[in-house]
View 1 (cartoon, rainbow, N blue to C red):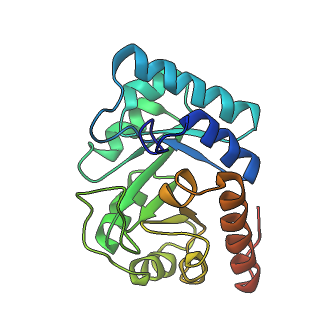
View 2: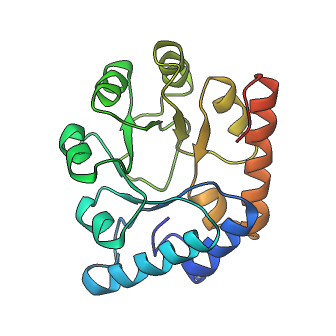
Length: 210
């Protein structure tokens, strides 16, 4: 989530509600019109980081390696157009590195560059990323899980509590959402419902819940 994803509400209130609802990781994704920059972005990032630390949840920055290092983030997530994954790994050392992938070749490259997890999507239609690639469904998640079973994947794009189950059944370790929590009437409950759906699907698949 970024500062503009929470509608008329304070995004920090939404983040705190999501943390109380049980999200297991938070990614600062400041994108689109009217986004923060400079000192305002740093201040917002610090506030998000501090909330995450208070709840013991990893804090990851999307795309911006310099900001991630400045904030002391737990990691960075990069897309295919956001720089070389090997160079990012060199810069961040042992911090978490996530890489977006859309097909098996990109998954293979991310794995060889030392990605700790991959984000695959858009699984379903999404409004959070206007320039998103075509919907890919769950097939790339299944292919990645079969080819690289040791590499965790997270489904991205249009995911909510009512459609998260098939994403996990296809082999994903988790799901990444914005709208389903940030614009929910009750973000805490939305986060709790999504987490419950994911955990139930993992149990059905015989995979550990952690």
